[in-house]
Image 1 (tube, one colour):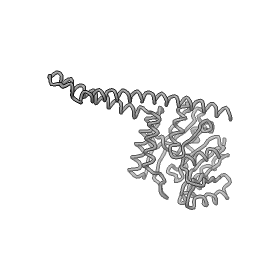
Image 2 (cartoon, one colour):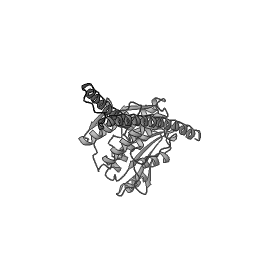
Image 3 (cartoon, rainbow, N blue to C red):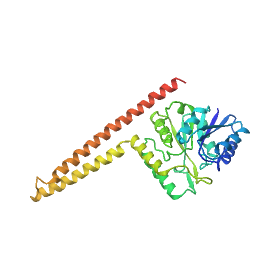
Image 4 (cartoon, one colour):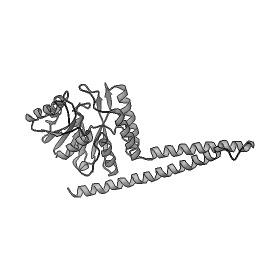
Length: 311
């Protein structure tokens, strides 16, 4: 059973040696493994330091992307280049300690029914240390919001800390280049009925270097993904809100009617009708979008069967 550990890196010269030493130390307990560093077009000394480390460590392989294409593309490169039966992904700054690799691997080795293991600092037993309040707040809100759009009851959906069986990734047509790849994988895994398990994890604040994540763009992309995954979040709320305005307007007009002061030519009459009709139309749009989303999942199942049949 070969294990592949994929570490995407971008301008991580402060962390690269520390991370590789710690991960390599953990992996020495396994008979067959590989560590894949995917440099995402770093402009500092990351690639040089990683290659130097690999010269004296034959289990470490370095792959370079000529330009910065995003975490998703780096992970996809790692998936393509790896050949392990179990694939682990982990952050380059070790926000999740390398010891989590053992915990993730243990779950897959000891339960053949599990296909994906996700490290979660937000589930019961999970922990967060030294993470800035604003970053932690945004992360928790994002995970709650995006998690709601998925059918599985997962407390952490954006984390990179994961373990996959090879056949899971081989069965998917992955497209994301950014951090949305973590959401895309879970979405397609749920749609194709793979079993996902969360385990408690410890998330620690970055000790060296600067975070490369852009919170504004990341938040927007996660919101858009959630709306794409569950359209009724948007259409349902908007439709019900407009219908409610129309109903309240109708109640007010009925009240005026009972008082004998209702003027049929008042614009409020037209406003009430427009609100109710618009609300119903938007709810219908939401229903159609939901059906399209469900159809999309059937497509994922067909893609899974086709890809696995070619292996």
